[in-house]
Length: 151
Image 1 (cartoon, rainbow, N blue to C red):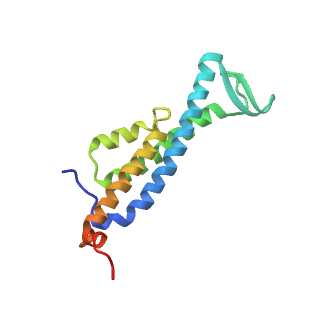
Image 2 (tube, one colour; image 1 turned 135 degrees about the vertical axis):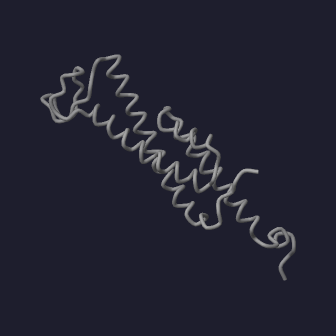
Image 3 (cartoon, rainbow, N blue to C red; image 1 turned 180 degrees about the vertical axis):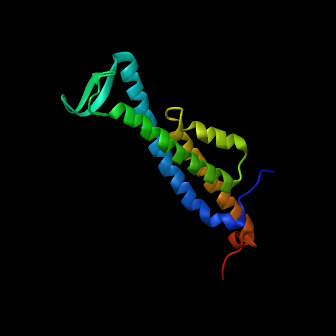
């Protein structure tokens, strides 16, 4: 039988789930933007420059950015936010006491495009189901309360 969350950890799980949901969506969006930027650079030889000679935002040939390099900035921001995402998944994983496979799968969500969006829904549903079954199992006479009519 798989491990269940500890009783003392149950109040921490909703906040950890919310943190995971937020970081999952942000990481997924940053990853998609990064993929678009890489395709732009590889196939068209362009980078995104901000505040340069060509206006507020402009596509310039790769390696010729003289102002703020949005392409490089996007890479850096995604990298650091992926670390925050890893912290959030480790927190959920350790509170829920799941096996190592779930940790590895969730970690892939930050490097495989669109995976974080699908996993976010599945992980939250799995955790909430596990918590509700745990709370229902701990309620004394829970099945009798549902069957017997109240007077």
